[in-house]
Length: 225
Image (cartoon, rainbow, N blue to C red; front, side, top):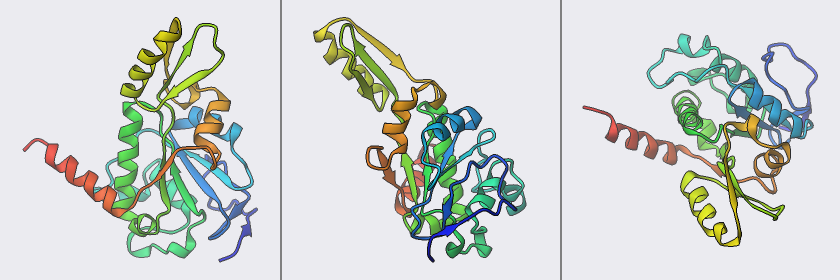
C-alpha cells in the first residue's frame, strides 16, 4: 500500500492529533501517551507530517480477560482501535493499519511502567499480528537528570539506579542537583524532542510476541496463589 494523504476525519477519535500521511510504507507513527498534558508536550515537538499523538483517558483496563464489548467500548481502547483502523480479534486486518509504527511513550515512573504493560497485554490479546509484524515499540523517556554547579551540561538517566550512579560519579566534579522527572509534561520540550520523538536520536525498543509472552510468564509467576 502506498502513501496516502488523509483529510477524512470521519470516525477518527477527537483526541487524536493525527499525522498527514498514513498507510504501509508511509513512515507514519502513532505515539500513545498518558493523558492530555503528555499529549500536548509531545505534539509541540513532533513532526505533524508523519507523527500522530493519542492520549490515554485514564489507566487502561487489563484487556486479557475483558470481553470484546468491554474493550471496544472502553474510554481509551475504543479510540485506539478506531485510530489504528485494523479492527480487533477475528475482524483484524493488518492491511488496514494506518501507521507503520505504534510507539508506547509512557511517563517515566511506576504508573507509566504499569500502563506500558497493560498496553502490551492489549495488543497480545486483541491485535497480536501487530506484534508479530514488529510494529510496536517502547520509547524510553529519561527518568531524571543531574546537573553540576557551573556546568551547563544536563546529564540524563533512564532509571533510578542509573540516576543514583550518575549523581555519585558527578559529585567529584562539584555540587550536584538531582531532578527526577514527574511525567512527560514536566520534561523540557527539547529533551522530549531529542530523547523521545526524533527517530534518529530517541531510544526505542521493538517488542514482539516472544517478549510479551515472557513478560506474561513472569507476571504469572509472581501472582499470589
